[in-house]
Amino acid sequence: MDSLSPRERLLRTLRFQPVDRVPDYEFGVWRQTAERWRNEGLDTPVITEWGPLERWFNTDDQLFGPGLPINIGLLPAFEHKILEDRGTHWILQDEDGAISEQMKPEYGASIPHYIRYAIETRADWERMRDERLNPDHPDRLPPYLDARIRRLRNRDYPLSLWLGSLYGWIRNWMGVERISLMVYDDRPLVEEIMEHLTQLTLSVLSKLAGRGIEVDQGDWWEDMCFNHGSLLSPRLFAELMVPRYKRITDYLRREFGTEFNQLDCDGNIHELVPLWLEGGINVMFPIESAHTDVYRIAHQFGTRVALRGAFDKRALIAGPAAIDAEFARLQPLLARGGYIPHTDHLVPPDVSLENYTYYRRRKCELIGKPWQEPGIRHKAGYQQTWRLLGPFANEEGQGLDTALPPERDLQAPGPFAGKGGAQLQWRPYRGEAVSGYVDLSAALSPEPWCLGYAACELYAPSEREGWLELGSSDGLQVWLNGERVLRSDTRRAAAPRQDMVPVHLRQGWNTVLLKVGREEDEWGFYFRLTDDRGEAWGDISARM
View 1 (cartoon, rainbow, N blue to C red):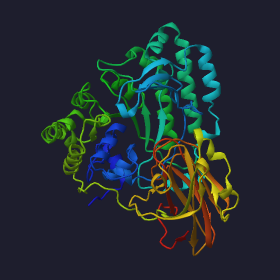
View 2 (cartoon, rainbow, N blue to C red):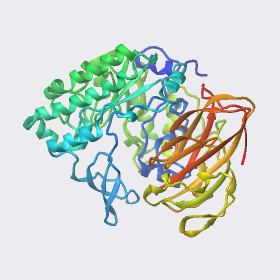
View 3 (cartoon, one colour):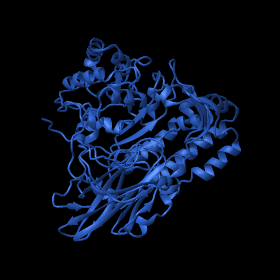
View 4 (spheres, one colour):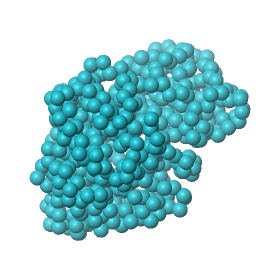
């Protein structure tokens, strides 16, 4: 049996201290891999992102509660949209403003061919800075901040803050070639952008300081190395980036007690590890085995650096013998401490579900975690008794903010004019999914670009404060007792606890109304009501 909390287990592992077992984390899979596994028997309705797979494979990630989702990137991000359909390919604009030609997911995975980047001139940068990188944008901090922090103070799981990038984002905004030339041709502009990102991050962190919250880890991303080394020379890295990293990591340690900063970088990272350490970044992952010697880093830096990943994903393709050999290769590193094993990047689509399940079983044996057969296990508190209404039209996602009759009068009898002129009535729904997922695609319509409503009443024997834990695909609005408590206009695959709202339940019956929009993929939601510790109340009842 585990004797340490998830938080204690991670911190002790990173400190090279004894633990009951190392944490069981994974890095994730490609979308095409998840689709393959669904065809091979992975039985869960929303499987295009890693979140549901964490629950399916019972990793330690699914033990975590809510975090503190700050936003230090583009706000707003560019609209992700298809500009042209070329049969097997799209011309699209991504969230970073880059325009590229990409293969459609159903035809495989490929590296995008970039046509234009968001920053090609100083004027492009100044426009992006002024329109999308305002440090004081109100959405840089999550809603209900005080309530979130109150709940986080008594957590038993680690808390990380996403701190983004000093190089990787700029590379995405202007391309590898342009930034590689610009550090020589217009170094002041590169420094100006990096400095703005540094000051933006410190500005957001300053709004959290002094609130009594401890942050266990800062999470960074760069992806700035190729197979032979860094895309930026070590000299320029030391001059441009190390001092700025250090300003942020020093602030984290001083204001939040942050002991660890973890950085995600692929490729050959050998020449950058000592510089990251100088900047206060002391956890490296995912250690891509094709290009980086994990033992060389371990021997060179000792307990100064903790390591994650390093399991060569290519062994998953070869099968059980190769998987066993790869674990044997990493066994001395695990015995040494300061190491969390998992795949060295996203699992590719040529890995079978059978091979990955074997890998998961062997890994659990190696780290001393009891094995559970894969599958979604029921967690108490998911509401699956509803009245459903739909589908209504949601062309290009515009329907989320178009008020329809249920929003004006929840008791309106209908019929209602739905998508394509169909006459709609409320229909009863009693879900049985052990995941808690309400599948609107199956219950209302498989068509894209639609929206629907879900309504119920919840009975509380006493007045109380609680939380709504929500997830949706895609956009979501929620009303409690006639008051709108959430609007989330987003495109995503549904997962539990994507949105969290502190709410007040009155004694007696409380009305709930959800409006869920769909674009082109899955359609559904999760709804769970909990107390301040994240536990479901056992005395709440529901009716349609």
